[in-house]
Length: 481
Image (cartoon, rainbow, N blue to C red):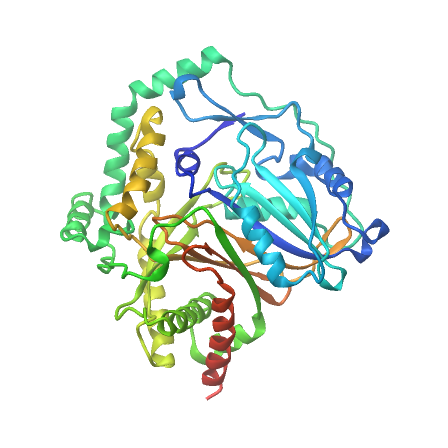
């Protein structure tokens, strides 16, 4: 039995008619090695039935609400868990193109998860060109973070077409506390709320200028420095006063989603890194800067100052099992889309990323956890939703978009015997983080790019994928000079 953390609960509170806080992945697999040459619902369901207990957040766990909303929900094993209820199968009409697949995934990503059962769904999409199958997997962010998602995938995938033997589940089913215990714990925590809130404020105060949007407020940097000095902590490098410029993808988002996927050779990105310096992540950020510059400039919407990017960072010091719940924070980084020269732009991206990483390393990175704990559970949901709804009305733009780079295994994996050819992350867009999210995942020598956007703002994000390919060619040529 475990309870949602304040960060976990925030992902539940953030949901509205236009925002759903689930994350997803789109796997492309070759089912030729599956029994009968087909990846089917019964085959996948049997796999999950035998391995659900190995996942970082067991796939059979559901939410149990605390009466009167006095406290955050608990997790417990669903006594009626049946993997078949979470898996569906769809078929693309011929010819089964990438565009057809992207449109279908966009529609699937628009749909919320059912909170009365374990918070995940899987869709097997048949009919792709070349006899391939797509596997769309959606999990609520309240249940899982990036590290937990990777460990869950590892539990389901194999190193060869032959499934490995796994230990049987011998643990007793996890159960939420009884009604009286939940009410008692909730009332106690409500009574202690003023003290816990004061502690969270004290812990967050030294790093106020790390919070997206606050660094641009006059005096916030000074407050952070003064508090750090009073606490006799080493004064961290001051965060730059970042102000996110207006862009076409920072208008209020709608309900619909558009999706695009692409591939870049990992070795060519490493070649850029070797030629121009920095890390693979620096090269990925520079590629995104160039692609977004081209996209914005083409529309006459290129700002004369850098975009402001939210970059998720894991706070885990151990495995997902050792630290349950979401363990994530955010770095806010300027993205030099305003720099016309590609070499200077790459250098600016490297410099800004280095500065952000140095500051993040010296600080706790815990401001997400502390800020999420400022509100008592009974009002946290209402206040969070009101704040998110007010942001676009007040033209509040903490960041322009979110970019994430997730390293993955550099060897092939298999699902029920089907070889995984690629895995494309499909993440979250909100009014606060912007109507565009770019996530890349390196797998088996390729960098798989997953882009999700508000369809009302960016109807066809595949154009950004095309610009990423152009940016790769440009930086490759420069790295050889």
